[in-house]
Length: 252
Image: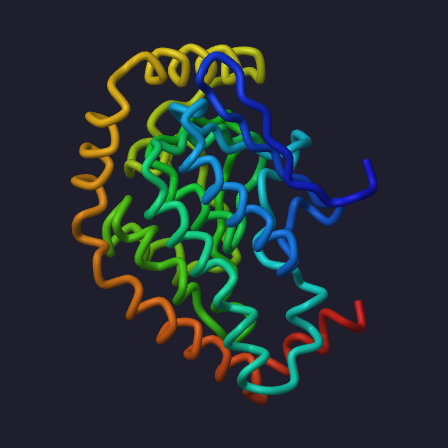
């Protein structure tokens, strides 16, 4: 595989979205927009009763936002737009009337952590360790924080964000409510995801939609918070500290 994509298929009431990017399943803006559009469309598709979100490959579930795009940001508006990408994705996942089930295989970094946090339920392999690396380059996981803190609480979020160079294990994630279940093999993960999503697809769509609205009822103000958080990052990415740090990455 060499070309980035976002594809989906619907079978037995389950819509499975798969994304891929050759650079660690990272997300350039165009691919984030494609994923947002896909989630919006499936949310209105009567054939899809529940959505499974997964990535291709085994080692990295998602490396976050595109580092190539981050490196060339030179003004505030471009920076704010860049960091709004994951904000818009998380809002689309919140607004989707269908349950979104994360099927997580491989490491999860930065914005990818926000994606998993925005899933309504997450099953993972034991190789799905996570890391929030933003502070190490002079910014912070501001945009994705509401989704993560909603899932695991502020204390666990601070443990992640204040240790940006440390990976935490899938078991830590399960103990803190980030993952619902963890499996040792890919076969077990796939089987469990299929069984769980197909069982959900048999339940009342109206009941599930009402349940989801309850799950997310404390996120009603995110439409205001997310743009503010994107602006924070858009400003900080232009700071001398961040520019110097990013230039070090360029020269490697």
